[in-house]
Structures are given as C-alpha cells and as structure tokens.
Image 1 (cartoon, rainbow, N blue to C red):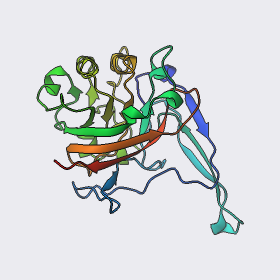
Image 2 (image 1 turned 90 degrees about the vertical axis):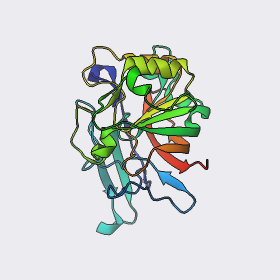
Image 3 (image 1 turned 90 degrees about the horizontal axis):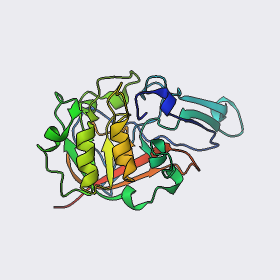
Length: 251
C-alpha cells in the first residue's frame, strides 16, 4: 500500500502455476542479516496472509493450491490473488502522476546500483527535512530508510500499524531536488496514514523516482549496499510486488 485512501489504488489478481514468488522467512533475532554465501541478502518480505500486513482497505491476499502433490495430485498448482501494493513492492510514476510511466516501463537503472540504508530512531514518525538533515544522505544515489517498522518487526506482522514512520513532503522534496534515483521504506507506505493529499508520492513520482515500500530490513543494519530491486513486469499498471536483494559494499 502506498497512500491514504483506497480510491487512489488499483488492484491486480495474479494466477501463477507451479511457481513460488515469496522468499524464505527472515529471522528477527539478530541485527546481522544472513547472506546466501555470495554476500547477497534478501530484503523481501515473505508474502503470506498470516504474516504480511495489508494496508487498511486494500485487497486482501489469498493463496490457494488448485492441485497439490501432497494430497495425491499429479502436480502442484497454485493461484495467488493480491493487491498490486502487497508486501515488498514498487510504486511507478503512474500511481500518482496522470501520464506517468506504468511499472513495466520503469527503467532498470534506478532499480539496480548503490544504495544507502539510513537508520531512523524509533521515536521518529515523521522523516521530515529536519530529521533528514541529521543523516549523511547527500552522496547516496538511492536512499532507503530503516525505521521503527523494522525495530518493531511490523513487516512480519499481519496487523496493520497506522503509526508507521513516513517520509514528509519537505524531505521528499529535498530528495527529489538532489537527484536521488530511488527511495525506499520498510513499511507498506511512504506516505503518512490519513494524509489529506499524497504529496510525498507526487513529489517523488513526479520526478520519475520509483518508491520501494515494504522492505524487510529488521536484520539488515544501516550502511552502503549494492541493491537489486525488480518488480513483476505487469503491463500498464501503477505498481507491482518486487524481489529486493542487497549486498554490503566494501568501503
């Protein structure tokens, strides 16, 4: 989810046969994330109705087995139904820009490259210009915020928390003016819950800056990383679930 009203959203239903979209569950017991042996760390929230939060009023997630070898069928076949902004996902400009690019036309370049994860204290809900000024972000090509949502494990809880940390419009303007290529957050919206207008989204997406929401950063410390965050290629829609992986950059 990415904004305060359901009327601003569209939904997608995905049917997938013999496929697995979700990643392996992540532990919350440590602040050091495990890699796959090559240094790559999965920063994707597992799509699971039992553990994945859904923005208030958004399309619920539903996962069914049409056929199941464990029950004697000759193969396993699944059907997935979910909103376009479920779990870890990317907002394309089309989300809040009338003639903005849909998710299948977002260039790859902003989605792949150096990224900086910035720790925001648990006490901070509004990441505004003053809070942004307290952190070293101006040399970063891609900026990702690790907030109270990670500290409290909210991307691993099906309960929707309305008091998540959000990017205030004045901070969004600074990021856009600085030429940041991508902005990421660790909950399912970058916009304040109940905001009267989606100014943060309009500011970033209006400059063609993709917004990654719902990143699973509970076990991933602040620092500089190589990032690959690729959405499903859904033609003509405003967003899609994504797979996000990070690798610590050598200083």
